Amino acid sequence: MFSFPQWLRERHPALTDASIAAVLTLSEEGGTVPFIARYRKEKTGNLDEVAIGAILTGKESWDAIVKRQAFIAEEIERQGKLTDELKAKLASTFDLERLEDLYLPYKLKRKTKAQAAREAGLAPLADWIWDTAHGSTAEGTLDEKVATFVDAEKGVKDAAAALDMAKDLIVERLAESAPLREGVRRALFDEGSLRTKKGEKAKPASKFELYFAYDEKITRLLDPKTSHRYLAIRRGWLEEELTISFGAALFGSSAAGASSANQAGAEEEIDKAEKAWEKKLLAPFEFAACPKKGAPGEKILEKAARLAMRVYVLPSIETEVHKALREIADAAAIDVFANNLRTVLLAAPFGAKAVLGVDPGIRTGCKLAVVDERGAYVTSDVIHTHSAREAESAKHVLRTLVSKHGIRAVAVGNGTAGRETEAFVREALAGISEVAIPVVMVSESGASIYSASEIAREEHPDLDLTVRGAISIARRFQDPLSELVKIDPKSIGVGQYQHDVSETSLKKSLDGVVDSSVNAVGVNVNTASQYLLSRVAGIGPSLARSIVSHRATKGLFRTRKELRDVPRFSETTFEQAAGFLRIPDGTSPLDNTGIHPERTPALEAL
Image (cartoon, rainbow, N blue to C red; front, side, top):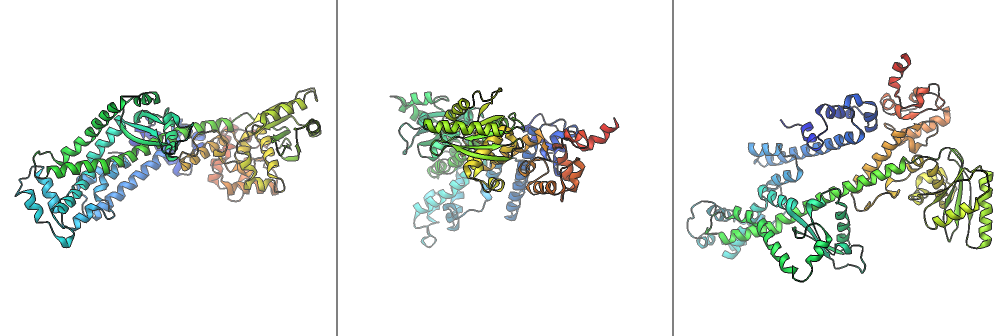
């Protein structure tokens, strides 16, 4: 009997039935991925967050397939056409494309040529032509048979029209054949090639010039290591600088090979290969349509086979190839993006020390913002460095701010004029103290997004956008994780093709990385912002606001148990979140560790 664990284990061989069942049970009970990975290792067989995420994603896919199976079976049964054989096929098919192949002959369609022919009464003629090519004895000639179906009132004005409409019904039968569709699918996925040429809107010195004459096997593009090329090709295709076609693999898997194809004399080789490729795809359709040579409707059947393959099946399978290529490329690009984001979020913090943030600028000057050791805004200023007089004044301003506010480091944004500003600040602060004050370049990706966001307006309603940007630069040097959680992850600028991949998948993955990073580090419940608290397992935005409000009115938390006094902080939430919350200088030293409160009695007894 087919079961979900067996299906999932095919994709993740290391997983066992017991670990899959444990993860699903814990998830149904409200367990979050960080909680399950950290505090339920003994139940899951020591699975990490990646494996747990794979199980939950696999369960979503499994549920979608089972739901579709049930829907298709119900629809076909409603038509009175659900046989035991078809029901068994549906129940044993766990690929959405192949499920749709089985459903296609029974799917309700809009008005088609085949439907019009059926309504005009041409189905018996189409059946006669088909049957005589598949072993039935022909009664009379084709012309005699066709003549009986001519009926002007039904739109069949002559014999040619009758044959054409019968052909439409045969095309539909061939195009909806699951085995024939599978044959084209396998040929294209296993042996096919994606070919690109220069498009109508190609620009001089185009960034897609590499793909103006390009040929690559689909199997290589389905490899996550090389799938990024499809994203580049797709972007060029959408911008109409490239054209895309599928066919036989001609020149290996490189642009150089494809380029050589366009040299003199290669056109004949290409044409020969393309004809052989089409013949290979068409052969099963021609045999399926007319296995008996010399049958009365042989020519009609051959024409129907060509139409079914070229016009209906091949374009449909090419769409599947595009979908598969994009899914693989999206997953690979998102994975790179997620790994880069994790590295940025978990960068070593400078710590609780006063920092001067500098947002470089040329025309409008450099914006300065001082934040204290808690990250709170203190003051701001603007300096210009164009002329010698302005430069001297700017140096004086920098030195005054550093001395007055006990600045321990200067964070300079890496935007326009960042390097020049860094060098200027370094020169201005040279020798003003016994210990050199570090001047550090900091990525300012997303700082402008933050400065105009609702979060920034809530934090600093009376400050200019440019000052908010400088504050963000200073804070992200102090504590990258605490500051960057306020910014949309895809605005942090650590990935490629972020505008080409699935926005839903990208957001889901990046949000998961942020949540994972926050929970891996832990959060000081007495100092964390509501935005940081909302990322803790089991705590959402609403409950995070309640924690901050409770902290403001009742004072700092002394123990984790006091979290239960926060409105709507349930026992389930406490179980999920408590292990990731820290209380330094609290009543119990264990509350400042990753040890879950449920283990506290055992440790105290020990």
